[in-house]
Length: 240
Ligand SMILES: Nc1nc2c(ncn2[C@@H]2O[C@H](COP(=O)(O)OP(=O)(O)OP(=O)(O)O)[C@@H](O)[C@H]2O)c(=O)[nH]1
Ligand SMILES: [Mg+2]
Image 1 (cartoon, rainbow, N blue to C red):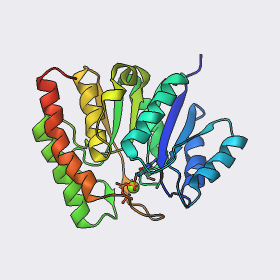
Image 2: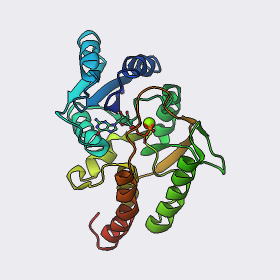
Image 3: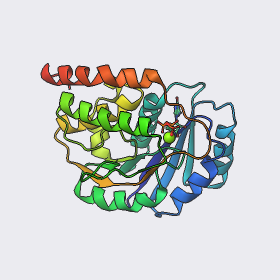
Image 4: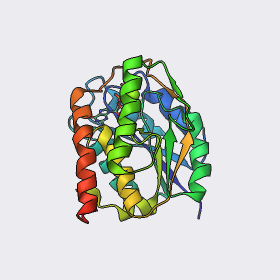
């Protein structure tokens, strides 16, 4: 049977981006389908997706009543993907920070890996375009911090452009995943690593959003600071 891959895109107020993004994703590879998980965006993003989904079999929509965070949006998407028999499952932002043109490189890399991560900080290079220096430093040092505390040797553990083999999502206890912001990315990779899966990082160019508004918050950063210690503790006490 032909392989199928699902690109999960969580959205909250991405009206300016979503239609363009869906088109750009679908044209990358015939195996790709897309699932938008919209949290009742007040700007009508959900309605735009519904209209496209009605016309295009490769477009799917999942609606949640209100803004509930990125992590739980992905978990809902993962469960949907497992129920619908996809071989590969992607995480991707709606705001074009993650260039759809990288998708074929992920599909190539996943042939020899269980998890493929798009990395902004590989081989000593920083491939981030248009971030203020403060944000870049926060992200860069967050990665060093996460590496030190968890032992997970990734150049970019907080990035959100990723591809999982179906077996990884089946092996992880999705109901036990607790983080919701940037820590969610670390937690998923950490759990995959602890289960012995092969994680590969491929270089990506990350471009700051030009349309729509940022949902980044101090709360998301605080969660990540504590979460890495909890992950380490859970691993030590055999809870992963
Ligand atoms: N469903 C859902 N999607 C969300 C939520 N928060 C953020 N998103 C989406 O998740 C993706 C990443 O969020 P962003 O706001 O781009 O976060 P970021 O990339 O850290 O910050 P900026 O690019 O500066 O905005 C985007 O597609 C958002 O629309 C949420 O609570 N629920
Ligand atoms: Mg973004």
